Image (tube, rainbow, N blue to C red):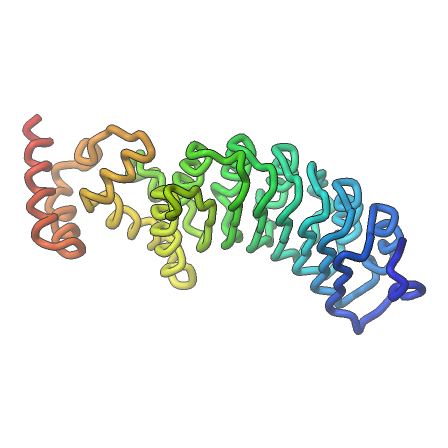
Length: 294
């Protein structure tokens, strides 16, 4: 059914926010709302939490919002599983999508990936807490986000199908330690990334290292995103304990010094001394000499 508040209301310049939480909406109700949604010229926020939209209703809703000024769409706990998104029917101003407590699976992640790819993407926040996402779904999202320069917040907590392997893919997304080049090419746009793989009731090592990378992204977000990559190199590659931990987590066995041209060694040592102190400089100098000799 259509909420009675919208009966006869097919065009309005005065409505900015609509909330019909736990209102019994199904796909039929969404279809009835389409004329209103297509003509609500100033509607920026739509909240349909705790309804029975399911996948079909959400897909109808999304297509109806193609030319809408909608910025934030909230459909938590609406029974949504698979998501079909036509790249020609993506809301042009959408910045926040909140889909916690649904049944979003690998197919749903494939649909969401279309929102995250391409130079015209506008999404800055994507919340997927408590769905049915597994490692395959994470891989799909990571591939889509790798070169995305708009998404700031991604939350995939409480998805029981995400293992340490999935967490590792998310860590590599924001700080790939496999090489200096890989670190520089990591995602420097995400400022909050939550997977929270719990270990003995504490935030996991993976989440802790993700947090370290996203803190750097936040620090450089407004002024110099490329600076975030250089800072990650200094923090991760040129600090022996941080590098050892990241290499252990990501299964990397390559020596840092195999990547460094000996002619650039004085510059590297100067950076180590400046940012990490004399003790770290001494350790780096020892390993550098050993690397050059070998």
